[in-house]
Amino acid sequence: MKKILLGSAALLVAACASSQMPWQKTEAVAEAPAASVAAPVLTVEDAETFITAAEAELTEMGEYAARVYWLQATNINFDTNWLVSKVGAKYTQMAVRLANGTKKYEDLDLPDELARKMSILKAGITIPAPSTDGVADELANITTNLESTYSTGTFEHNGEKLNLTQLSNIIAESRDPEELATVWAGWREISKPMKSEYARMVEIANEGARELGFSDTADMWLANYDMPSADMEKEVERLWTQVEPLYDQLHCKVRADLNEKYGDDVQPADGFIRADLLGNMWAQQWSNIYDIVGPETSGPSYDVTTKLEEKGYTPLKMVETAENFFTSLGLEELPETFWERSQITRPRDREVVCHASAWDLDSKDDIRIKMCTQVNAEDFQTVHHELGHNYYQRAYKNQSTLHQGGAHDGFHEAIGDFLALSITPSYLKDIGLIEESEIPDASADTGLLMNQALDKIAFLPFGLMVDKWRWEVFRGETTPEEYNDSWVKLRQQYQGITPPVERASDAFDPGAKYHIPGNTPYLRYFLSFVMQFQFHKAACEMSGWEGPLHRCSIYNNKEVGEKFNAMMEMGASKPWPDALEAFTGTREMDGSAIIEYFDPLMTYLKEENEGRACGWK
Ligand code: X8Z
Ligand code: ZN
Image (cartoon, rainbow, N blue to C red; front, side):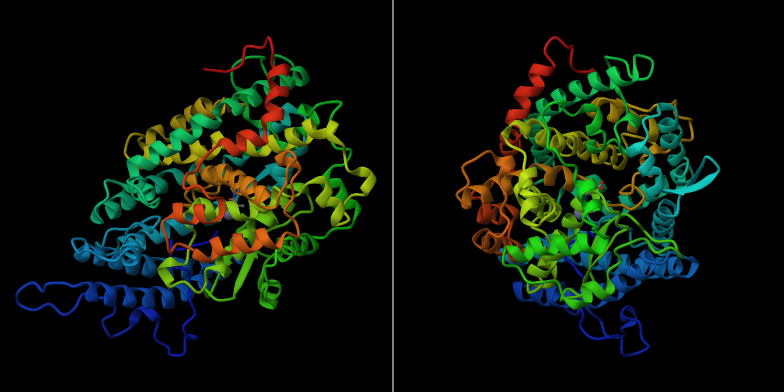
């Protein structure tokens, strides 16, 4: 999801009618009431006035900035980078001024909704700058440069200059360990030049966070979950402890099968798994190697990529199919402008940010996705993911500006994925992608679950380690000299994987993953991968489903749709446990739904792994 400041999507007030830029306003906006000689005693009304003015400012500037960002993300060049740096700096200055403005009201006993807006305003800036002159400009230049370096990165392989999409396809499809290692390391060349800029950005962000009263940027990121930062960190640990045994079994089985396929020299039977053998550039989701690690006898008779190709699906048809899932739940169709303005495939004549995202340009109806969609199972999942963001944005558009956001960022990431958990064989039959006769019977469940686990379970430690790395960096526990070693170590510790080749001392592997140069916090995905199963289980129960969770589809279920939309409409207006309770009846994030979903697979994995020495520590 593209969001410049949490809780402040861009609302359209009016088109930019004057030649004045929104931030060059002459009247004082969102300032405290005029100071008198003695410090004025501030009231709840003053706080309300401040927030109303702040929301108006965020709305106006937000839309302006969002449109500039969209132009750059769909056409990266010198000028659009220049514009994005300018608007980014101004936006950060404004957001920091408003965040600092909340301090005056800290001692007031504010009504809940107002207090919530204050804290969203204060903690919602992803990379803050201090108010020192010139620093916001420096920061904006760095962040623009990092993201465009990533998005335009290429590596020459077999005499051809390849972009990330092409390199990723090789990692997904090649079974030649030498080629895999070359491409894996080749992509990581693009991030070496980012390292020093990244280090400077960390310094700036921490100065900004401290000015706002946080101990560092990690503290600030963790302050967005309706509880003290330290408690949230413990919550994350608790969730990880719940799901870790699932990952350990999956790792053990996959390592054994890779060992069998490639032999001891390429993949030893014990220790870490070689990161380039797992079918994904970052080894974050492994379903591309289902052909190697899936059960031989039990599995569906179809492959979604093949089916999409056979049935002549285009990227556009994939998005229409995803929209149809949402409308089957009783939600409205996407607006015409979505189809006119979205970028669904990679343009051939210009550089773009290909990493998929969903945008809300005006906080009304100008919602869009930006993808470089390919016709395959992975992107079929991603189009549902992105539309989830758009449907959430539209559901909460009538909330006030600072409440236009997810209940927390994990909710935002979970919406589309939750729906996509209903892409079952019988759903695929309903939409005509497979025939009735191709619906596999229960004997195929192990295969179906294995395929799902390769994406959903494999992801969990990755979802966790990315921000573990950043928290340590922001806290100064990892210095720039240690950036890469610490990344490699966390990958080993949590994922049990290791680079295929030795890392050079100037390597900056974290920079080769979009969300690091793109400054998108990552904890959200870990939370989402746990919570989407909670949503799925609650929805299936609501629909009266009594079979195994992985066979349940809520397609066409209007009752579930209505309840789900009610949660989405709440946006960020209430603490997230209220939103969770509204849909699932529980106020806690909980891994037991994902454990229940994969329970039959766990039994199978344990049998398969019998006699093996699992683990890598
Ligand atoms: O970045 C994304 C989405 C956009 S919010 C495509 N995801 C994470 C990733 O690709 O690393 C979705 C799953 C995890
Ligand atoms: Zn997302």
